[in-house]
Image (cartoon, rainbow, N blue to C red; front, side):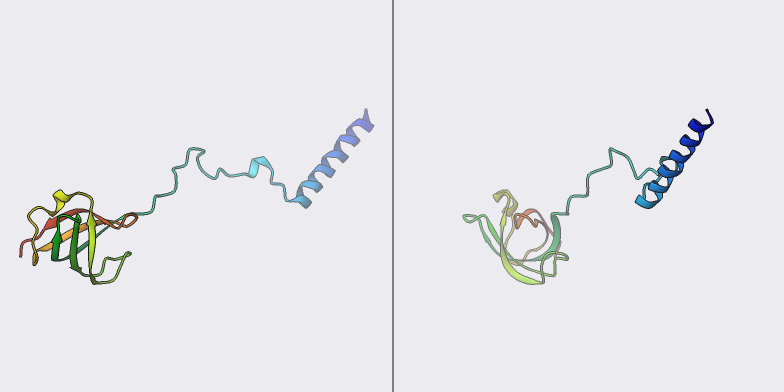
Length: 118
């Protein structure tokens, strides 16, 4: 009986020593790292906004040429043509109009445009 108890104690010491050497952390000291149902990583922002002046409107090409300021996180100030997601966005716009617009960075297309008061 005493031999069995001594064997168990020796085994416990060996298991403990092995755990220390191998870096195993006892379950009682483990801390939860978060929910199994943690939210997915944030999707990178694809829409950016800018302000500028209409230089040209080309209905046939579904295109708008804008002279715009810097669009933070997307491009420097410049004059360039952009496709629009729908020709209806071009209605009522003419050269010289001041506008605010939204661009989908992935598609490089204007998805929203608002004429500003001059």
